[in-house]
Length: 280
Ligand SMILES: C[S@@+](CC[C@H](N)C(=O)[O-])C[C@H]1O[C@@H](n2cnc3c(N)ncnc32)[C@H](O)[C@@H]1O
Image 1: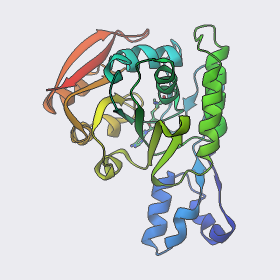
Image 2: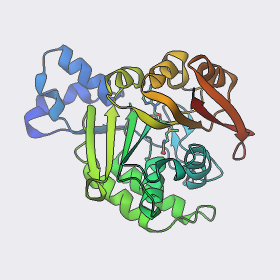
Image 3: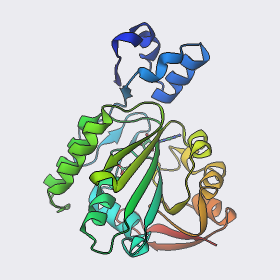
C-alpha cells in the first residue's frame, strides 16, 4: 500500500489523502474543495513490489520498472546511447533532457554520473522529469543497491552516493513542479509531480534530448498516446533527439506524425528493437 506523511498543520486534510489516487490527484481534489494549504503535505508514496529484487514491479500497472537485462544497462544502451550522450552535451553551456516517467530515477542517476565523468561536459545539465506516482526515497536507494549487487550491472559505487543525495532532497517533494539543485547547482533536477499531459503543458523548457519511459504502452497507454507525444513535441526544437525502449507501431506512428524521423535499432533482450528519433 502507498503510505503518506502529513505535517501538523495539514493533519485535518490527511484523511482525504489516504487514498490510492496519485498525490497530484489528491492535492487537486483538496484545492478544488478550498484547502489552499494542501501544498504543505510533503508526500504520498507509490507502493512497489520488491519480490523480484532485480526487477521492481508496479502493482498499479502490473509491469516492471526496468529491463530484465539490467536497469543500468537499459539506461545506458536505450537512453544515453539512444540520445547520443555524452557527445550531444559536449562543449555546450547548458543541456536539457526531458523524461516522461521518473520512476526510480535510474535514468537520471546514470545520466548525472555520465555527465560527472565527462571532461567535456556542458556547464549545466537540466533534467526535467514527469511522474504521477512518486516512489519513496528509500526505494530510490534500494533500486541502486539492487543494480550494483546484480552481476549484470557493474556501475561504480558513486551512484549510490548520488542516490542518497537525491533521496535527501526527495523528503521535500510536493505535487506540481519543483527543482532540486545537485552537484553544486550544476545538475538541476526539475520534477513535475502529476499527470503527464497537464504537466507537459505547464513546463517551460526546451528539450535537447527526450527519454520516453512509461510502462509498457499496452498497460500504460496515456504515456504514449498521440496527444502525449504531441505535447512532448511542443517542448522540443528542431534537432532534439529522442530515445525509447518501445518500438511498438503506435509509438513509432505517433512520433512520425508529430514530426520526428524515427529509426529502429537493436533492442536489449527480451526486446527486439528500441527507437531513436530526431525532430525534423
Ligand atoms: C518504467 S517507469 C520509469 C522508470 C524510470 N525512468 C527510471 O529510470 O527508473 C514508468 C513511470 O511512469 C509513471 N507514469 C505512468 N503513468 C503516468 C502518467 N499518466 N503520468 C505521469 N507518470 C506516469 C509511473 O508511475 C512510472 O514511475
